[in-house]
Image (tube, rainbow, N blue to C red):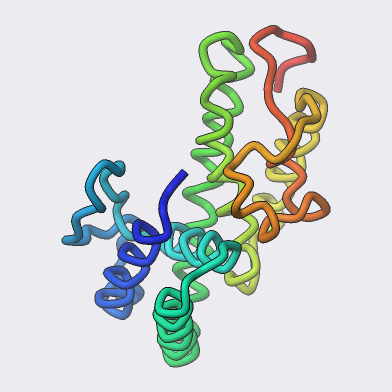
Length: 196
């Protein structure tokens, strides 16, 4: 689980180059930022990663200074989104397509060899969360991509073993089961259902 400091630093560094990123053709954008001691290196800047860091932070109990920092960052994020609305939606659409491919790849890998991939689910499911976050920002998602996500969800529901919230309990309130049902289950290491 990432720390508050980890997500705040990522969000802050991302905001510094967000306008440049939105106007670029890149989906994955390099960022010069070092993660807090003992935490994993930061991923490249993507719109999905920015939205995920924001969602995790909004789900947590923050100290007053952290809350003020987050509020300031959200206001700046909203200012940039409003100013570059078309670029934002275009980047969200392209990012959705890229993340959908990655999510589909993971599901296919799991389907082919469940025992080798079931334990990656708690990490890889962040892609499914990002897809939900991006779809709310993208304006229009092509019908074929929405259809593919529906198919992937159908197959995931058939394989998912109900469980409690699989991420850190501290952020559960920000990811309710009605919307983020896939965060409330695990995959088995056996082959329990038909493949994709």
